[in-house]
Length: 250
Image (tube, rainbow, N blue to C red; front, top):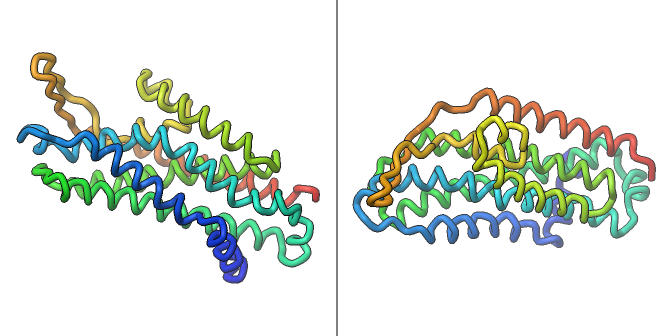
């Protein structure tokens, strides 16, 4: 297992995967930071607004980011026509375990950096609202669960088609559908896994003043049921990807 992971890390260095893991948090920082709170009321509600907006940003960015990570993880073997050679050097279980561990680790790094960006924004922009530690942890767990689920769905597509294009197309279309579902009734969003970031969000708009254009956000109950379903779906996609690699003819 250790040798398989080490081999995947060496490949990742040449693919510059770290740049992708860093790019997403940077985009989130620039995107979320563009809406700088100005008045005292906005600063007192800034963390709530941030954690309301970040899931929407994730709905746009993460499906494509997961498609890129998954496609690059297997694309080098497809381009080099090396699966048959790899299977003679290491077991399929070892190869899949190395790729699954590396991919999950990259996703974890990306989510950790994104949560750190949320903290950094509060420091840089001088948020006066009390830091919401529990919602931050919950948001991080939900983001990680959805990202891992999307990652293994894209890896499964790569194993099926041996071509990055279907995975990338599904990522792009999924981002668009997920964004559309974010503004539909909650029941609709439950059928769109690419957009699970939004129904799993712990903040909602509780009041909007039309005259002053002031928005007040409030906490809503955590969606433990949907989070559990997301984890189960991620496990099912993980098992399907492993089965596909195990039974794949080369």
